Image (tube, rainbow, N blue to C red; front, top):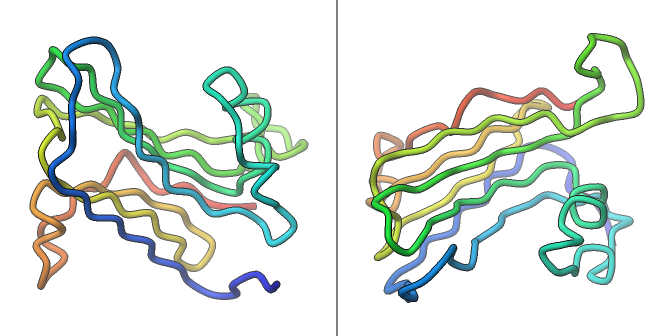
Length: 146
């Protein structure tokens, strides 16, 4: 296997999403992993998300909805070479997030991009405008990889 060198643009469209009548709903997660990662490295339950999944991937994004609220939360994370105190250290995960007072419960799109070493995440309620980029809303700000 080989890692992809260059820019990446992953887009996922979904339709007819089932939303149960209680609690947080299953989340769609997009991610970029190093070529050394295996499926076993990435597979975990909710309790293992941060120590196993997050420690393996280079960047990831997700959306989160609750059954009974018209709201969607978005998170984008990427490896960072700078600790919170500004010192260079073992790579941590830098976070960019946002939310919107609209539930992504019927259809929509998520987009995770790596362009020139910069990670960015986007969402769209109209499949990204399909023929243009005008339908995409960026989640937070860009995250620079080390």
